[in-house]
Length: 129
Image 1 (cartoon, rainbow, N blue to C red):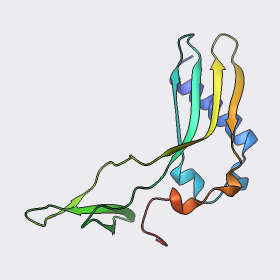
Image 2 (cartoon, one colour):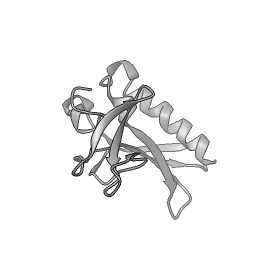
Image 3 (cartoon, helix red, strand yellow):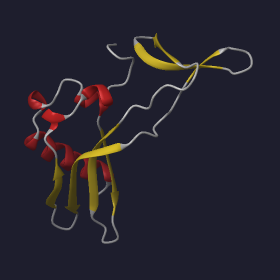
């Protein structure tokens, strides 16, 4: 079983337990499905949310090509630069499962209720944007 097969199984099980229609409207844009193998060769798959970090001094949000980006002006020239990647905020695991590739058995270890989550903590873009 490769990563694509494991992620397909994880997505299928997650969709069964948390159907898209019952997930908050902001959730799928903010969630990340990822996985890795443990020492026994099983796949540990998880769905996580990363909290947005506060903007640094001088940074601001700007809509570019229909998407929100963080603009970080160059400290000397003032030239606008797009912040490509940033993820230092706390990460919340909302779903986690272990898949045994030998028999494709699944052990769901984490399955949080999404209704209590504050989307403003995870939704990328300016407040209210």
